[in-house]
Every structure is written in structure tokens, then in C-alpha cells.
Amino acid sequence: MQKDLLYQIALTLIPNIGDVNAKALVNHFGSAEAVFHAPKKVFDELEGIGTIRANSIKHFKDFRRAEEEIEFLKKYKITPLFLTDKSYPQRLLNCSDSPPLLYYKGNADLNSSRIVAVVGTRNNDEYGKNLCEKLIADLANEEVIIVSGLAFGIDSIAHKASLKNNIQTVGVLAHGLDRVYPAQNISLAKQMVSSGGLLTEFKSSTIPDKQNFPGRNRIVAGMSDAIIVIESGIKGGSLITAELANSYNKDVFAFPGRVEDSKSQGCNYLIKSNKAILITNAEDMLENMGWKNFKKPSVKKQRELFIELSSEEKAVVEILQIQEQVHIDELYFKSKLSSSAIAQALLMLEMQGIVASLPGKMYKIA
Image (cartoon, rainbow, N blue to C red; front, side, top):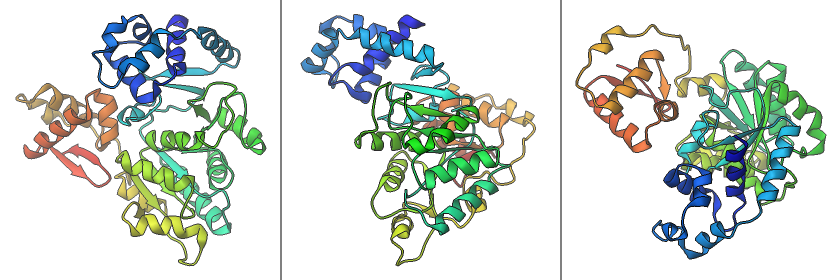
């Protein structure tokens, strides 16, 4: 395991590679170690790699830095999550620019069936604070995990309200796990480790540079089923997260605000431009996601009689027989099928009247 981890960390250290190419290389060769041992001529045949990237791989020597990181992870009992691990947030695998390796300290299941991101301005007012606290309180019995960025303002309010209401909450960081930014949230972060967790793609000694925050936002958006924007200016991290979520085909929601209020301009813009669904409470979101009044169903035995289905269609039906309503992202990571295979299977199943689509990208047995 340590040998595998050494190469996995080293892969993220190679200059000129980046997340997209790193994942493509692992998918092609089967493992991070195999990437380093592949002959240089093989890289010439791979699209997007080229001579410069091939040379970067073959000339990489900084394994000592990877070894130091492994020692850090051991000392502080931090869990590395590589893209081939079952515990890696499977929703992220559907995002082309997701990180190949994450570092996690916590106890929340990052593949839980309902993950909701709550984001907003760092400079909230009482209106935003009250909305956030009420939203979280109303989600207390809905079996959700709340994700945010552990920043000042709405992020911190969401995390604190989650802890208060016994909801697991995960903070996604823009730096390594050897620090907490802002420092005023150290106590909050410690509580979250025991009731949720802290997650980052950045190695130890990485400081919270400005360029790290958009990367942090893509993880918040990519690992969640729904993204809720509570207060936001027309520019800033919350709008970036919402835009990323839309690009990942996620459900985005926003609370409206007064037209003259600068802290509501971002939310109003998202709603006006059809980039977010207007909500006024938690129930609106739950209804749109198909999560309202959810009950564990009994398995529909009659569906076992379907015999002329493809292997992909059978995989989808088997999942839907266990859960009455399933989000499309959950179908992706439970079936292990590609997005195109899932789309084709769902289309054929709907045409046969076996599966029905619901609001919020949810599906069920018809």
C-alpha cells in the first residue's frame, strides 16, 4: 500500500501534467506506478501527452517529497483517497478536472446518498445568517451531509449550524491539512473532524494562496448533489462554485434577496439567468431533488421478470429495485458505468416503460 501511495503522490508532483492528464494516464496504464514504469515511446502514442509531458514523467526524481508526505499522513492519521479507491468521492469522477488524489481527516461517508453544499458570501448580514441557520435546522432529519469551504461568513455559519443540529459537515480546504485558514476556525475544524471531516487536494505545507480557492470550489461543487447559494455578491467564490456546479450538471439553488442589496445580487443573477432554482426554504430544495417524504421501499419483485435487458440496463434496474428514487450521480458511481452508458440505458428503459424520470435528475422504477 505504501508503495502504491508513493507513486500516487509522486504523480501529482510531476510538472506539466495536471489533473486531467494524470487521470487519463492512470486510466490507460491501470495504476500510478505503471505510469512511471512505462517506456517513453508509449507516451508518444497517447493523445494530449506529447514530448514535454513525457520527459517530465521520465525525468521525475523527487520521490523524497512523496515520502515526506507519507510520513505526515501517518503521523496525523490522515487518509489518502486516490481516484481508484472505493472511498474516493465517486461523484467527482464525473468531473473532468477533479483531482486524482485527496487527503481526508474525518468520519463522514463521502459517498453518502445525500450531500448538499451550502455556500455564500464571507461578509454576510443578519438576513443571510438567519436563512442559513433555518435551512440547516430544517435539514436535521433528512439524512444529509453539509459541505462548504470553512471560510468566514456563510461557510462557517453552515458548518456551525450543522454541528448544532447533529448533521455531519465536511469542510473543503484550499491548503494542506497542517493548518487551518482562517485561523479563527481552528476550534470549529477540530469539532468537524469528529462529526464530518476536512478534505483537501493539497499536500502539507501548501499555504492558502489565492489561486487555490477556485480549485477548492470545484471539489465542493463536484462532490455534492445540490448546491445552495444563500448570499452572494455578483463576483466571488460562491458564483464560481455555482457556475462550476452548472457545468457538472448539478442542481443549483439560490435564496432571492432585495434587488438593491449588493449581497443578494449574485443570487438574483443566478435565478434570473436560470442558473439556479429559486427557493425560500429547505422544503423547496427537498421537493426539487425528489427527497421529500422519502421512504425505504420494498423491492419490487415483479421487475425480476425482465429478461431481455442489456447488462447496463440490468445494472440500472438492480439499483432502482433497492432504492425507490436514485439521483443520476448515484447511478454513475454505484453501477461503475460511464455517463454515456448510463444515459443510453436510462433512455431505453424509459422507452420500455420500466423506468420513470423525476425532477432533480432522479429516477425510479415505473
